[in-house]
Length: 250
Image (cartoon, rainbow, N blue to C red; front, side, top):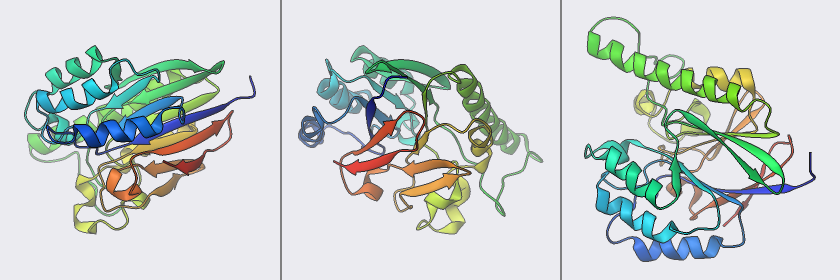
């Protein structure tokens, strides 16, 4: 494999709206020349309105960096998520919805697996697959998300670098700081199963604004790149081959 360093910029919970254009544009300008790939961990918009998606689309249209994103709960709130996705993709931002992608950077194939994830809780607070049909549909939705992670990691298994991009948390460690009573609504450790099995190089998520930056699933580093947690516009991870990442702040 070529001896190359891949710089991955990431952020979640940008919450674009009609007033945030200058802020977003300034952050992207600062990133120029500092990263090879940009990953957005959901909640791109404030309420999931098409005009909010246009803020990011106009800022990133024509970006020289490949840009990938997943949706968050805010992006689905207004029921216009299909329009939001279409606007982003028209601007060259690839939205991964239980899908995978492979991008070549500096001669290295980077496998990306992206999906929103969903709720369900962690040890001591799991939502059950039992009872009312509505509750069981929630359980099934999280099962579908976990299956998408597994399927995607199998598809990119031969890539020298593999990244999982989520919105909801797959591990409780990065939720520390949030009230424990709401952890079941911030993610699910059922998303961690395929991560533990396939051991990608990096897992990124957002959603938990008061959570902790760094966690781990087995040997796999997990980072909560929610904007309020980072306190910065982007975090840039440097990936070298199959080594684990180290971050530099931007």
